[in-house]
Length: 404
Image 1: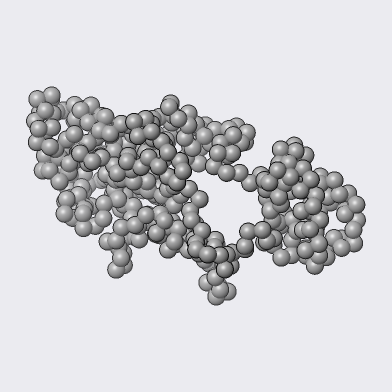
Image 2 (image 1 turned 180 degrees about the horizontal axis):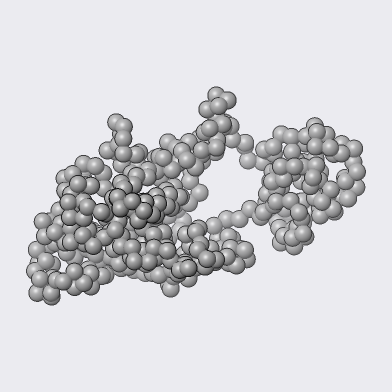
């Protein structure tokens, strides 16, 4: 079986920023051919993003802010507001299996690239839309970003912010909600392709940042609705499990943290005590049963904090290799890139001039192959030649402002 199940699928992506293009990137890693349409003059605005917080990249060099969501695509610079440019778009749509866009409804209608317009030239095309707030409701025509629709409105931000903390917890990194939502979109498109193969009928696929944000909080939202109370975040430094010392964070001697999640504390208590060099606690009557462990959680936490504080994370990583219960080092976005388990599974892959995180789905125990993101409009002439345009016509289109 091929490790690239979407080989031969053609995707026409008319989108910008991170959300929808990241969906196109996933489809590309699954084997699809993705043509990215960018405005003939300005291109994808994401190309101008060269600084996030303290992290800067050289504007003249490869930019992770564009490569993450645009790996392996071909870029065509096209002004689809120009009648000649729109004609080219429709020619590309005739050959595509998927039309992928994040244009707002009013823009799609103004440019005449809505579902009925694209299906007029290709009745079997799958029309996939990424939006901020979904295709229905009073706010369906509003735009948004992952910070607004996914993180804030979708309930993660407030659920993560402890009461009494000034302000609201920010997303942990750029395009956090975009990337999750883009993967959802790719999955929906794959299902639509499967359905079309079975029934012959194309689908309209919709994924929104808001819907993805609510889905990401789905377990918590269902629980909150059922018991009629919101999630209350724990202040950092507090032990979050009131009846279980083996579910929480412990600081190491070098200021790092270890995360324990052992939901059956009585089962793992003795093993943890041996690994943290406190065998005397194994037969301590305070921790003889799950019920007693729960009653003496505060004392257990204090004892484990003292024990874990005596060694560095590196030392604990070696010692805890044989621990039977679930645990993990707490890592930042740089540390995770050196994690041997991440590397063993090729969750970070070589894309040429930089490394990129692979999409999380693997087929036949094979990591996807990563390719560089295209330079702006780099394949415009190549794609037009494939469509049958000659050089004389291409020059005319450039002079008319229809292409880059």
